[in-house]
Length: 367
Ligand code: HEM
Image 1 (cartoon, rainbow, N blue to C red):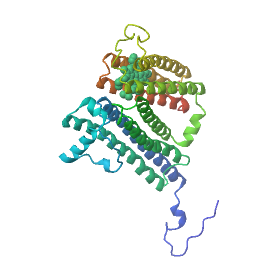
Image 2: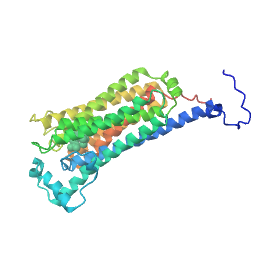
Image 3: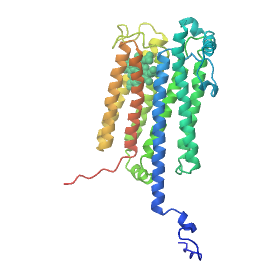
Image 4: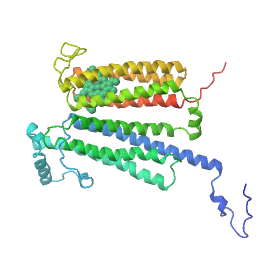
């Protein structure tokens, strides 16, 4: 250990360089308070992404997505504020094929405009809610070692998401009267990935690094592998769901369990095929989550068992709600709950995976 230098004559107590160095206990307190702040930030971002998914879903379900025909990152912040500027925006909308298909009045146009504007505005808020804290935490050296990249990746994806959103809108401005379904699937899929990364970061920040390292040694490897497979299948189902939504394929074949009286759809249109795949994959996902739950039970760990059970119950509710959504002809109020349910099911699966990957120490019951 370095020897402590004697204090200079007349120097005030507490002004020597050693006093500026935090004591070990203080440093570890500072580290855990930094982790707590970063965690809150990740949770806030994840909640904003949920808001974004809901507003985005409602923008689609109200057919509002093509009402703003330009992309101006800065000037687009302001909505039209005068009758003239509304006229200008309306005139631009009248140039695209969707106007011909629907022929809304000015008042109807204003409604769809506000939805799309709200979605874009919230997107800008999410961007700022990432950028400002990120640079603040970077400048104040509050980011623990090895975390910069993990925090940066969702932020970069938020930026990419904006570009994909616009790329999606452009697919509906010239020939089509709505956006290309595969672009919608990509946009929704990326939103779910951003949400998943933010959630995982928040889980990991809830524990100290040394606690995570200790918990890691207890992890249930076979369950982790199977859980990864389950999440991958769930994600595939989410993408297929977005294709169904993008094609408006939930508005036909509204009988269940059959499709117009037969197991296979009688007419193999893209809408019928995607709906058929979504039905079948939905049942498969439910079965696989059931197997996942069974494996969680086998660990005997209370947290793992609990989250495995939440996953199967939520999965079951999601499938039942999917059937209700379908049989009601994909009404917006059913569809939006189904979409939110999928996002929360993903969260529950990830939470179960976290319990499997970093199981908390079990308390031994007293005799
Ligand atoms: C684990 C099971 C399921 C998951 C995770 C899931 C997920 C999704 C997702 C993410 C969407 C896109 C929502 C949007 O972008 O608005 C969707 C749409 C849809 N899903 Fe599912 N789904 C599941 C099961 C089912 C089942 C079993 C059915 C019916 C038998 C069903 C019927 C529908 C319908 C009709 C739509 C279109 C709704 C619209 O037009 O907005 N889903 N699903």
